[in-house]
Image (cartoon, rainbow, N blue to C red; front, side, top):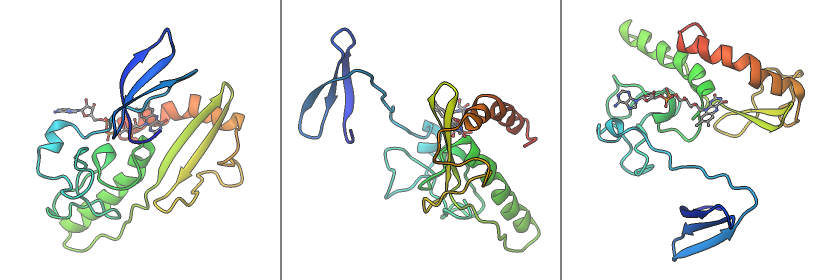
Length: 181
Ligand SMILES: Cc1cc2nc3c(=O)[nH]c(=O)nc-3n(C[C@H](O)[C@H](O)[C@H](O)COP(=O)(O)OP(=O)(O)OC[C@H]3O[C@@H](n4cnc5c(N)ncnc54)[C@H](O)[C@@H]3O)c2cc1C
């Protein structure tokens, strides 16, 4: 359900109330999953770095979608969730964004143009049930860009995908936080 804001929930009756563009709507549910509003932190939204004509409520930073360089302040780059690009709000995206920004900063220091490009790499590990998951990786154009082609089929529910999500990725994320991955 799009363009609705959850305003109330009656757990005993299993009924959710939404504000819609025309009023309110009550919806009965068996299982409910709500995505909260996504926004940049206040200091980013109030920094003057955000887009003026899109994502105005979210305040994502106005960057070139390939170089991640700010469109008005070329000495500024953005990465991670605050980045104003159409895809890539995952930690795995950050792993592909860092080398791009690094390339352009080093090139700038050396007085040349960087060449690295971020293609929108986004990663959605979806646990479908215990022991089964899908590892869907895609780019700006929704092309599938599997990290393990021929080994992990992105559109199949697999045990190996579940194992990767549950066991291997935690170590990878921790390594990223320490700058080692
Ligand atoms: C439920 C859930 C599951 C997810 N699962 C995955 C997954 O399996 N794989 C994956 O790749 N991605 C996943 N993601 C997405 C991933 O968590 C984010 O894309 C990633 O954390 C973005 O990193 P970031 O550093 O840009 O932002 P954040 O991780 O949000 O870090 C921003 C930091 O800035 C801090 N901050 C805010 N304001 C200030 C301030 N004024 N001063 C100082 N610090 C401030 C915040 O406290 C926060 O620590 C998931 C996200 C959610 C919500």
